[in-house]
Image (cartoon, rainbow, N blue to C red; front, side, top):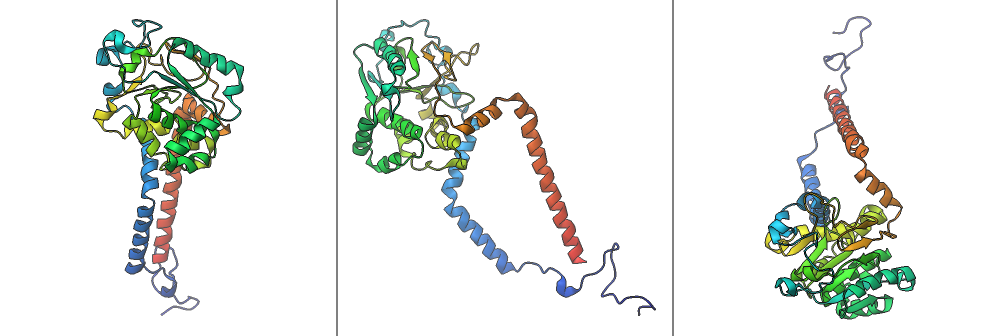
Length: 357
């Protein structure tokens, strides 16, 4: 019985926290409700499985790229190829000089869509250096009209998607794969000034230069006609055709660009990756063939236009290159996220103790 002046309590007080009437206490979730939520979650995962898988493959590419690297990286010790090209003639247009079959046909491709390089005297002069280094080779300059005809007639299944790409560089990137698959040969960016012939590389079914920090560059590729890997690059275009993160740079890179192509490379079995050669430098100069910005490599003078890069590219690239970002910003963001999660969990647990009385 409460004494004089004391209020009636519904039960014993605990740790100085007043009791809460039973009808205000939170009840445990009904098992049926939990089962329904679990079922809805599984249904959501089922319908989002393709998106989740594609996102995982793109995110994991930098980690998976080095796997089997000893099989596909060109090197003197591993593949008997001189990546410095010092032992090959500047005007060697065939691999027959070393006793190899030419797997890549003698075809040069350049792409100029829209009001671009086809009417720019400088880029036409740069392209001419490659034509001069490969006399007698068949040469194509793909314009809006010829590209539209090729895709419409040879790749009708992706024609509407190709026409509907949001960014012009997506059409150019996708066209690279279709041109290379149908004709084979060598495809080059318009800002690559050739310093020597590609003959020594024609012994391989596919060749592309290594990119930084992982993967390969699609600005220069060589391939045999109807190469299965290049066919995979064309076949997977619809699957990765999304507005990634809602930004131009990730959308281009993840749907058609270097990151996309490198991701498809990592998904190939080891015995197939071994045939997809990546041109990188020796240990003493690993950046020898990377086409990052205005650089000179054994094969090219890369003028480094990169005119398609949008406003978000500078931020993303700067974060990737900045030592301060890697050393401080990313760890601070990670620690802050963990701290916020800890506070939320702690607050939820405290509220549950209060409600239990």
